Length: 181
Image (cartoon, rainbow, N blue to C red; front, side):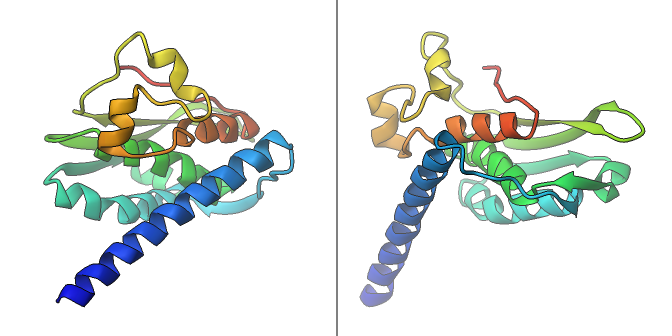
């Protein structure tokens, strides 16, 4: 049992380091204008299933409810774009929601914001019952390596890269990100 516990900790640490390395590589590629987005067909419902699958165990550990609000028509809609990078943005927001929520629920919503014969603009929202973000630090959250304050870094971890990567990926996709607290 002791060895299994130690191996589990090693696995968690290695996964954490891999996420940090991948974030640093992503921000470097974006800033060097070397990141290219895929243009492939995908179903939005499948992307959200992946995101929920990756985050649900953490929500369950904290006894948080995790909801997805997605119409069946939108779930089945075939879109053209980069599903991996879209899931990266959504996973970043949902991970933050789980990380900063001690009780309650997290809801992931997707709805059509605009639609034409050739294009659809999808609005995503991650709503949580977490601690919120003080107004005096909100402007810094989309800056590389920034977090609300050092005590947050000590308590919750993270590098401060997730939101800036999400913002830049969204811009590459012709969209934008933000938040309300």
